[in-house]
Each structure stands twice: as C-alpha cells, then as structure tokens.
Length: 143
Image (tube, rainbow, N blue to C red):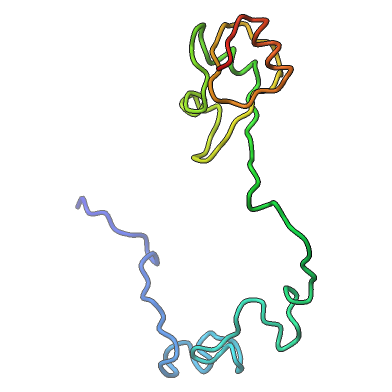
C-alpha cells in the first residue's frame, strides 16, 4: 500500500542488436544489406555516391555580409508610454528588465509608432528621426 509503480510497459529493456537471432533477427533492425547496415558504415553528410555534391556544384561568388548582420528589435513609443513613468531612464537594460526586448545579444531601435505622453530619458538607443521629434515634443531627453 502507498507504492507508486510505473505503468505497465513504461520500463523496457534496451534492445542490443547484432548479437544473434534472439536480438531482432537476421538484419538486426538495420534494413537489408549494404554499406549502411555494416558496423561503422555509412557516408558523410552531403555525400552523393561519388557524384559531385550539390555544395560543390553551386558557384560561390562575391561577399556576403550575413555573418556580421545586426538585428534590431522594434520598440514603439506606445510601449514606452505604457511601461515607463515620468523621469525614468529608457536604456537597453531597462527594456530587457521590462521584457520589451528579449535575448542576450538583442539590440533595440525606438520607432515613432503611437504617442509618447511621458517625459522619459533615452540612453544609448537607436532612435528614428520621427521618434526624436515626438520625444522632444513630449519634453523627453536623449543622451
């Protein structure tokens, strides 16, 4: 009484293949014969049986800036009005604290969506030209 047991069939013994007829039979769950059925068999990723692989058939020319691309999360003035009070500092760390920007390496840009109704101080953020006008009109400050 008072014993908690696992449901029937929850704990099954691991099947060890390749040890005779008792372990899943002749092909041991590896399909039929061939390179992929052998111990240590198989081919590397991208191998096409000796045909020139796709990654080598395609031409690579020019420069791609993709590895160095910076992604910016958009923060609207509406969200800042809702989440910040008068005189508070809006910075990347404060935006992360209030979960308006997520991610360890995230960057933010303030856009002029909506209206800003509070006098807040912006520090170290990218801000669009239209948003700068609205911030200064509301009495805010940009450092």
